[in-house]
Length: 248
Image 1 (spheres, rainbow, N blue to C red):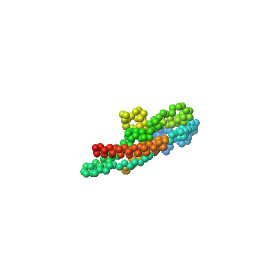
Image 2 (image 1 turned 135 degrees about the vertical axis):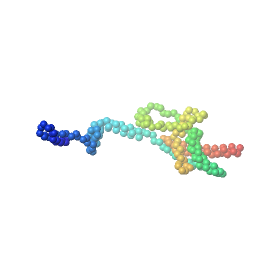
Image 3 (image 1 turned 120 degrees about the horizontal axis):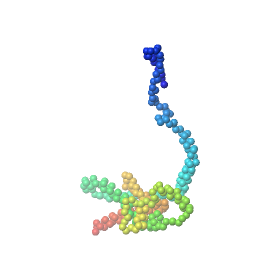
Image 4 (image 1 turned 90 degrees about the vertical axis):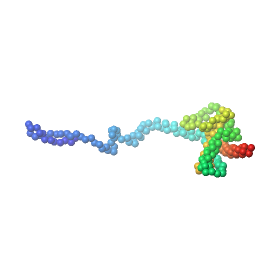
């Protein structure tokens, strides 16, 4: 603390010097290793010491995670994707008024959206299931092997744990009500069928991809080809019916 010597102004004695202490000013500058709350700087070696202290716990957790992922990788069922590409063309119209010219683009967009919904319709799915006779075939129907097996239980444990964190493979078709003439088994089979189907339009083109995912690549290919063929046949039937009704 700085000190100053000041003369004593007492009239009764000789002049003397006395010491006056000045208050210390608070320092507002902090060094690179200073901390406002007074804690010392944490070094990388501190983390290493903590990890080394808990090394057996860390090794056990690592081995459990590594073993679970390894077993699941070798026992998981691979999923194959079959793809078919369709060309959808709009019907040419004779434009005779300016209003029709303005509404032409909107009509074309509505037409393509309608075709995409038809590709994912329950009618087309049921027609494909009937054609390929898939009502009693997994995963759409049929009996499931429920017999107990130690090997199946051991290998299926990682898949069961992973299934808690992901969606089920039996996808359900969204926003589609079952038909009145469908049985419970048929409705479930159609829902699963549509759930594995994906319609992916190609931007700035008239092409659309049909994608179907299944563990069986041969069955997935057969389904996507049959679905594309049934869509074409159904479209021709609609045009033929409309022409016949107009002729009548």
